[in-house]
Amino acid sequence: MTAVARVGIEICFAILGLIGSGLLVLWAASPGKEISGDERWAVGTFPSPDDAWMAVVGEHAYSGSGRADTSQFEAVQLVRYVRHQGNPPDPSYIFTMEPGGDPEDRLLLQWLGPRKLQITAPNRSFIQIKKSGYEDVEVVVKYQPDDPAERARYLRARGLPPD
Image 1 (cartoon, one colour):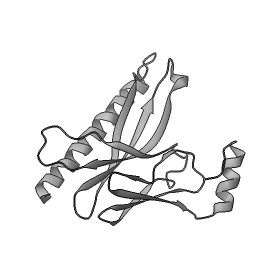
Image 2 (cartoon, rainbow, N blue to C red; image 1 turned 45 degrees about the horizontal axis):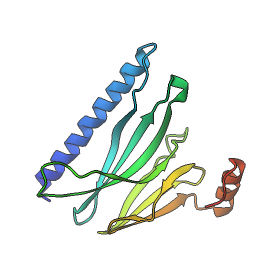
Image 3 (cartoon, one colour; image 1 turned 90 degrees about the vertical axis):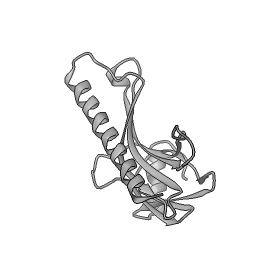
């Protein structure tokens, strides 16, 4: 993939992020308005070393019948670059977690190789989807700080089994 194409994709994701943020502000400022279905906005994009894949970190909001039924989560999707198709491929969710209250507790992504993506999540986080891979990409999840006993206590306190 050329540098021009990569910049173009990054600009597209940035514009989508601004649009999503704008929609969220409009929704919050409009009494009685609800999120219809779901809204998504990209936070960051991370190309693989060989530019065959793009990991996209985003925030999503889904709503039910009222504002109290709205849920929000952070997600990582993998998108394969396909140079010969007119339409972009459907992304696949490989990881989702509830956002934490502390802005420091964000997902960190790092490509360890052309087909190995590492996701680092806060040790005290509730993860809904955690896949070990997608197509030919291996996905490794690490926790920060890496304290398995504390993570097990956190999950048990929420009524969940340990990882």
